[in-house]
Length: 122
Ligand code: HEM
Image (cartoon, rainbow, N blue to C red; front, side, top):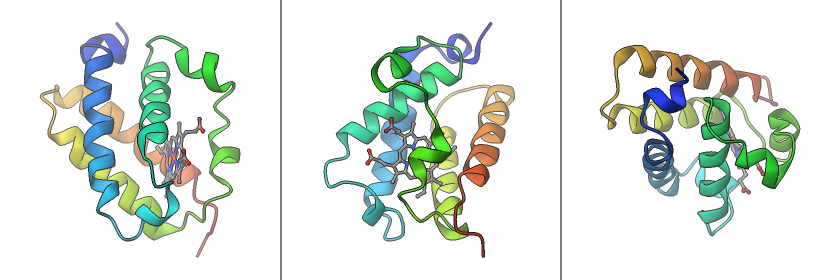
């Protein structure tokens, strides 16, 4: 069974990303990096995570290969940005009623991937 199936599919990813961007919207570190209208980022992250965790590959059909590191190079991502991103995602994850096993697997992905995206080492 994929994580996508284990968490109940698309709706869970929509709620996760909605919670995440609600926090980004009020974050003085992260908010300036994102466009004024958060609806495209919300859609892209939702589709990406659904695909990454074993759901439909709509993300790649629309956006091509994820190339996450290349796509993040235009934004300065240091320790503060990385930590804020992970904290908001982790808090959004905590609002969902999911097993600790699944949450742990998702958290460890977010932790590692966000570290990999740091492009301004201190
Ligand atoms: C686990 C870590 C992360 C994942 C999986 C992730 C995923 C994504 C995805 C899928 C996109 C959309 C790419 C596209 O199709 O155009 C995106 C955009 C973006 N990400 Fe991340 N990201 C992560 C970490 C971060 C971090 C740490 C920052 C730090 C500030 C960040 C800032 C942004 C920004 C500013 C955009 C552009 C939004 C837009 O203009 O549409 N991301 N990210």
